[in-house]
Image 1 (tube, rainbow, N blue to C red):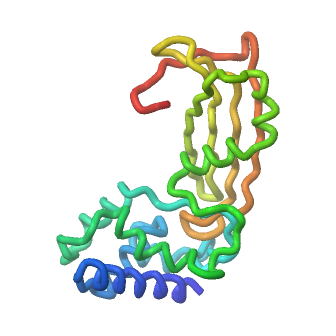
Image 2: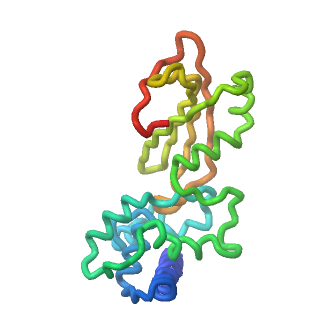
Image 3: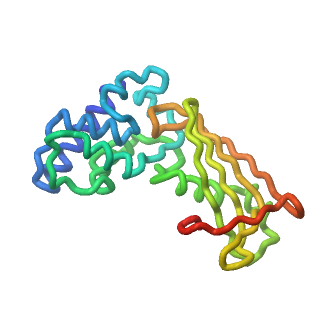
Length: 213
């Protein structure tokens, strides 16, 4: 199954580069790039993963795309890669599209571009969150996301805050999203969410860092 998925995406990537950019991509390069888009440092690492093989992808409920920075780094390591390939974001279209075409993707969740996008979606569609913070009315809430990646899965922590000054926010609560790993570094099982609200002395003041909110 892993070979079927990687071949499907590698063939799609080669067709994408040739049809849209007139670039002929070697099969070996396509397979290495696909491995990178699945979160692996090499095709060999992808094939060696027997614990969470990419062949389990049809079982995944959540799909989170690999960051462009990871792909960019891998591209610098591949000798003989065509220098005029489009950027990693655009190139990802050739890899990911066949995974979600037709009936290939059956989850009711959309694919997520990043864990930040996943966190925002989960919070905004959570009835528990909406009820917990309904009394804030029109006070703008801001979310600070952090991600902890471990072997068995990923934990996403979301601090719910509001500004108390131009440089500070007050933490009103925290949502924890647990994602069990299913397929490589992109496919996860059903998420579990827990929300903890804070009040009084439980609240903490955080300095706003550039790009944090």
